[in-house]
Length: 160
Image (tube, rainbow, N blue to C red; front, side):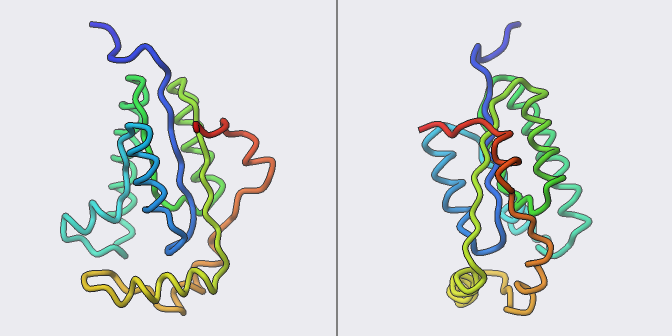
């Protein structure tokens, strides 16, 4: 049996800290480009798992990466919305896409800390949302390695 698609797949990486706007952009990309969107927070919430359970998150993200690899190998499109705060995480996802022969786009959302806090404060007030306080947000800042120009240049241009 042949491949389901004769075109190369495409991987869309949406990266940034909490409150940056990743989910909004990822949903838009998935709808616009008929792509599967993979986002661990929604899976964890639906499964009743604490969003701060890092062991479960790591296992889930590995499974979602394997799913992404399979979809890309079939010529499909995938939006990965993991946050991907470190260069090494992004490099691994770029390598995954390249190994599947897929184009890989990088979408970086990096508003300032005051804007992040404004958005998180609004989200914290919504029923059912996991609260992220200012101290937690400040603790995330040193973990965020915004892509530099050289890293950005290693990705494909975005589709219109």
